[in-house]
Length: 449
Image (cartoon, rainbow, N blue to C red; front, side, top):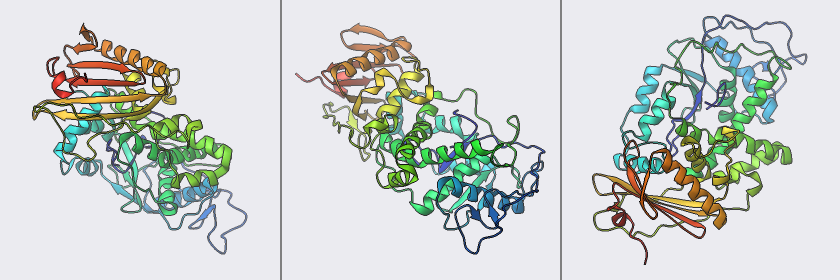
């Protein structure tokens, strides 16, 4: 996901390596004067691809989009420039295909997926107060991203796919550079397994997306100065655009690998150069905590949290593997920001006092066949950190007009998250039990003696 600014299946499920960018028409063209003084090299080398050096001009016009010949030229030079920045060689040319938005959306919605897994996953997102009961993750993610995806790298095809309703699409140069980094990663390192939990998947992608985001920023910084670049499309027209009412909490979570990941990659490169970044592909962070706080990588591993099943016969865990998810520090942060419990100066810095002491967590969704529930247990670095989180979590409940009928029990009376909650802190551990009613809380998770 790349584009003008922050706005694969994880347990988050964004297809392929999607990008947000507006690819609209413009009439400017690039000059053809100048060129690299060395001419074509005798053999392939970093900074030269398919007849183009990184600082060669390309003879293209963008007013009517780029035809196949123009796309080849732009892609070849952009590959050379990505090589120049990243100090890695492409093993083969990366083709660029064009897909209509209608077909792209049809591909995303086809098949229906696993209904049991979808209900389980929706309960995880509900535990974060990000996706409510009347919606679903799949619908919310499509509303947030579906109309804005303009291109992605397809590992199955080893190709970049531009989503456009024109056979001669315009090209956002930053998007192209970003997706070419993904092709380079695929050729040099492979993408590897995503991991089983939401937190591990976000952390894993913090390297692939963080590296690509970091490089596309370096690329853009050289345009207009060191390099002559194709013009950026106008922001006001062209293909799909992000909805003004998209789910900002969902987006904030999904954007973690791009923002926190690029900051992490920047620090590693500053300390160990590109060789150090390359080594990350064999030793990825274990958690988003390590992405957000690079000083905790690689030594501070997350705590493995297990939740005992204390449900009655009416309630049961979902038949999915694994039965629990770990949402991690970044998702906790997104919950707090999305629900107004914290107001950070830098929204995309992913740091706040109530989330910074995260040590581990486990969300276990439950069902009685009709309604959903969950138990969410978090472990914190200290009792103070746990208390800070409990205080912020109560603010989340208060933002939904929660009542406190007794002790540690809260009730959100109506709306997307209308439910009962039992919130208990025991030292460094905080357990939240959720159920449709106060009477059902004990059936989902009975309190220990």
